[in-house]
Image 1 (cartoon, rainbow, N blue to C red):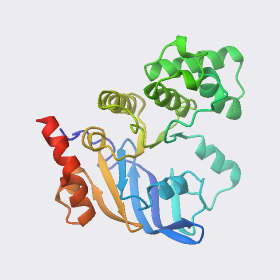
Image 2 (cartoon, rainbow, N blue to C red; image 1 turned 60 degrees about the vertical axis):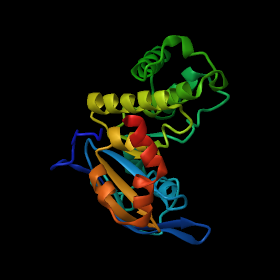
Image 3 (cartoon, rainbow, N blue to C red; image 1 turned 90 degrees about the vertical axis):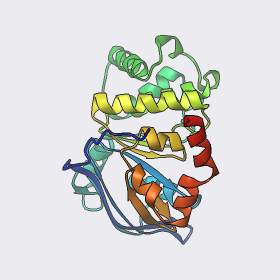
Image 4 (cartoon, one colour; image 1 turned 90 degrees about the horizontal axis):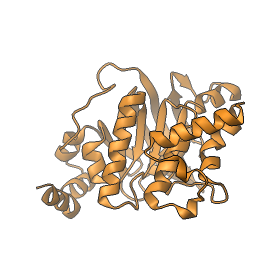
Length: 265
């Protein structure tokens, strides 16, 4: 069933606005004039063909890849027109879950979750401990994982620890890069449910790069589709299903989509 929640869609505050974004790497243009807006409280799914610009777009949004032209506004501030101190303050208002979790392999779960707080805040060890435990419990984990190393965790637990770390600074925006990749269908469904519950509870705005059709149907308010470096469709799942672009027709009506429909039936 497609998601029916419409947080932020109608009349909400715009928290991210992208206009004419051009970016790439090694001199090759990947994004060729991307435009979209995200409202407060929306869960956005970003889809596209391999090499279509999903990673470049996400990395450009969070500042890991310089853009070539265009503008990115976050919370009403053009990131090119503010001082470094204000940009850092804005960056503390978002959290990122990287593909695969990207936990520090030499740090324990406790140290991984505490890392953003130690880098950005001045807190006592006792408070760091309490917050780390609270964040882990928020994502469905318990104190018995605090001293484990990432290599001792299952794939699903790694994703949950990485999510706890992304939530460490109480962000308003959450960037998720393929959050359910590598998970079995049950674990992926549980993770989608967790994201939806956190969004409802914390009022998060979520930007999620995903290939998971179930995530697109169940967790996302709106989907942005990229192809050839541009936005080819932007809307709820119904918009994707009705789109005539060849890639979208193949993706949403191809064998994988039919397999999903058969499983749902």
